[in-house]
Each structure stands twice: as C-alpha cells, then as structure tokens.
Amino acid sequence: MKIAVVHTVFVSKGGGERFLYEVFRRLKKYHEIHLFCNGISSQTFDFNEFDHTIIPSRHNLWGKFVAYYEARALKKVIEGAMEWKPDILWLNRGYYHINWINRHYKIKTIPYVHYPIVIEKRKDSWARNIYRRMIDLETLESTAFAHTPIVLCNSKYTESVIRKMQPMANVQVIYPGIDHDKFFPTWEEEGYLYYNSRFQPIKNQDLALGVAEKTGYNLILSGFVSAANASYFEGIQNKSKKMNVEIIKNPSDEMIIQLLQKCSIFLFPSIGEHFGIAPVEAMACGKPVIGHNSGGTIETVGQAGVLCGDDLEDWVKATKELMGNDEMRKRIGRKAYEFSNLFTWDNTVREIMRILDEMDRMG
Image (cartoon, rainbow, N blue to C red; front, side):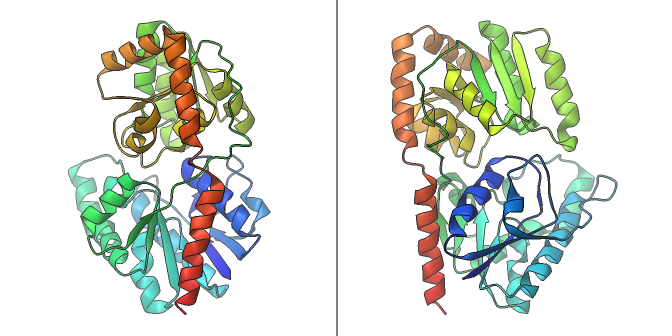
C-alpha cells in the first residue's frame, strides 16, 4: 500500500515528530511510505532516511498570519502528495482540509490528531480573534472530523476534546510508544531534578525554576529552542542564573537518556499536555514523576506518579517529600517503570496496521 504522510516543517524532536519517525520507519517494512512536507530541519530526527519530497512554502507574513499561511502551505503539500497517487493520505497536520480533499480527490484519509486547533495555545486580542473568525479553521476542522471514516488521536484527553467539538466523529485512541531498548532503568541517582521539554510558555519551565529555588535542589532543564520562543528561553536563562540550575539547549537523545537515568525526580509541569511522551520516557527509566494535573498527563503520570495543580507550594511539598524518602522514591520509580511497559512502538504500529487493513478492505 502506498501511504503519503503529510506534514508542514519538521523542526524539533517533539512528541509529534517522534511519533512519525518511530511509527513510519517500522511501517515502511510493510508499506511504501513517502513523506511530503515543507522542510526538514537538522535539529529533528533523521527523516531524510525516508523517501521524501520537500515543497517549500511561506509560513507567515513578517511573522504574522501564521495559521492562514500554514493552511496554504499544507494545501500545496497535499497537492504534491496526490501527484504520487497514494492509496492512503496520512494527515499529521491540516485536518481542516479533509472536506476539500474529499471533494477533489476522494482518497482514503487518516488524520492522526495530536491536538485539535480549538485547544491550541495562542495569544488573545481583538484583532487576532477577528482574524481567526475570518479564516474559521476551527469550524472547518470540526466538520472534517465528521466526514472521515476514522479519526485517530494520541490520548483520551484529546479524544474527549474532539468528541465535544464533533459528537459525530468516529474517534479512536492509539497511544504513542516508548523505545524500551533506549529508555530503560539503571537505578542510578545523582540527586538532581530534571525536566526535558521544548522551551515555550505552556511547557511551564517557570514552575520548575520555582521548585528549584524553594527546595534548593539542583535542577537540569533541557529542550529544543525555536526562534519564535527565543525571548522566553532567554528569560528562563536569566532567572536560572541565581539558582542551582543547568540549562541544556537542543540535547541529543543520548544525553536525554543519560540525564533521565541519573536524575532523582522528573518534573513535568507542562499545562494541558495532549499526551506527553517525556514523562513516560522518564517512567521507562524508573523515575518518579511529578506532573501537572491536566490534559493527557492525568492518563500517564496520574496512574503511577504524583499530580499537582498550579500551586507552587504543592510542587515544593511533593518534591521535598520524595527527595527525603528513599524508599518512597524507589517504590514509585518501580511502579512507574512497570506502567511504562504498556507503551511500546510495537503496540502502536500493530494498532495502526489493523486500521490500515480495515481501510484496505473498505475498497
């Protein structure tokens, strides 16, 4: 089966990029896979190992109108993908184009939803609100979800958002996996707190800094930095200078794994995370996780870790309690490790293969 994978620009090693890389490098053993995108950064996974076509396109106008220009860019990518004559179109972004795809191409389309537009974090102003209403991608996306045979998504939290916006959607959760050959426990500890995530406001590195400041424990922050969030990153760097905090920009997978294996606690204060692969990777390394009580984190950390809300004092109390109790820390770490074994890329790919077989039988 020929599967065209549609994306915008691969720029980081975030959860969405990791999902595509891990899933489709396994699927290409059984299917013909071709990536269609606007670009591939050197900072992301090695997507160049796939057959791919890059269709460059503008993504903003002097830093503005990003949603509009991204929609146009994705449309060009889809048009390029259709020239390849695929059997399946896999949409990693641009789900709002499904009705247009149905009208023009009548091809089987699978959207894998990391997060619907309605829960995208964005700046709010009267001008932006008018602009968003004019392009109305939220309505287009909601309608699209009702007119595709199946909508796949990454968590029950994401599923609940889709069902709320479009009750007629046929939604199925297929969780991302973990590479347990890479992420595994060594049961080492070096007494520091660790948080790995992209540097942007919703990832809430500020709260992690607050925990480090109030507890006195060493903290390591690592993650990808984009040009759009450069000022936020600089702010975090400036605040961290007065604390026992080390910041690592754009770490390699090998470095992330080593830091996970040797930390004492993994903090995950990200707000409204759609799934959150980072805490599950930490759990696979046998580490206790303190996570934000929101979004998909409730489905993972909530089953084998500690959840806190927005109150910094709750995070400080939980951190001190875990750091001061070796037996509790090890017990939660073992429980986390056992829970992480539910998430494997083999399970993920097996479920996707089943969906592909069902769609193939639909004719």
